[in-house]
Length: 427
Image 1 (cartoon, rainbow, N blue to C red):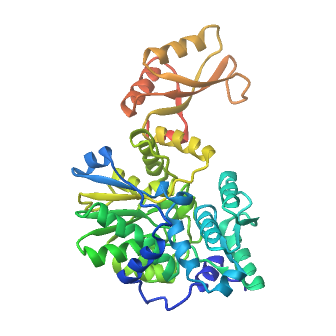
Image 2 (image 1 turned 135 degrees about the vertical axis):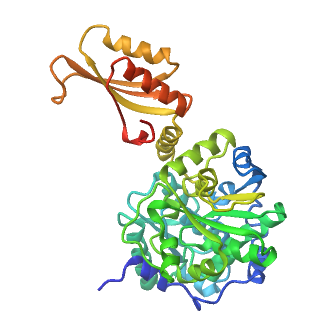
Image 3 (image 1 turned 120 degrees about the vertical axis):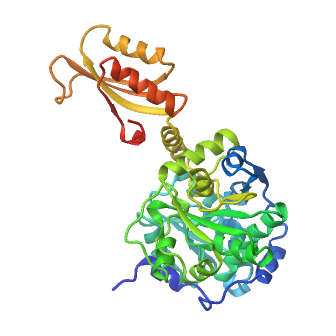
């Protein structure tokens, strides 16, 4: 029987699974990374501060080299390969961030890199990975299938597989984010970050708990891909049977053995957020902080905004783990975020097929202060009665209360209104 790719990936991790990374390992990593990675800024967030009742900050790894924190662990891992190993080259599998981090690090260290990506990977991420000098192979429909191909490439060619999270060097490299947070915000009480395979939160927790044990370290996963909470409940790493989320950067079906050991011992809480929570956070970051962040990078902010963390004390820091978002996905996510906030409505109404009816409908919407973004007028749908038409509209509003008033006014005027599923929060 062929092993599941998550299990085969876990088997590639080196070293004892229960030997935790230390603060000394993270501090040694920072020396290696000096002059390589950027000291990313810490930006204040007024909306989060208002929600928490105290200072809240954003650790902006979305502006890190290659667009995410991944360069930290990738560079450290490759830098510690022998000259012979570097000569054989390195190989990785990724839908985006890890591949770009490996490609950039390998180029800086003189190693050839091959990155396997799914056939449907966003073109900007494929182009960026190639731009950093890696050879990109598009294999399979999912990252899981790309992982199998990467492992087979490593076994066939002798190239060194660079694990995306379950390796001590990778964890130590990511832990330098934690060191920076504690230096930039010495009185921090809560650190919130995204969790995929667990490398970033493992490294941050190592640094935070060693330097300031009272700091609470909180992990966040998308509700549609929450392998870590399931693993913690089971007492061991478990694999999800299926998963789906817009946060592709943390869409990992099974945590690593080493990362699970760190999280189970050092992380205070794991929470999940919905797709609507994530979309709403992305819109807030774009509007209020002028920051472009990918869905995975926004889940920490989403958790603070949604209030799902049991005791988030201020000062709090949310890590924006990446900013590599496909513009097409950004368009869809912004629309979803606006809909979740009640600022973008999609709905249909039925009315009689008489001259002036469409104009009357649009006039009523305008009188309510809403802006029509798009209109589709259909009269030939077999579901419609004779002499009836259906109008589908996309409308911009000023928020949930305004949306509710608009829908109420339409229904009071006799228009049957059916809301699109994306706007299920409104009735």
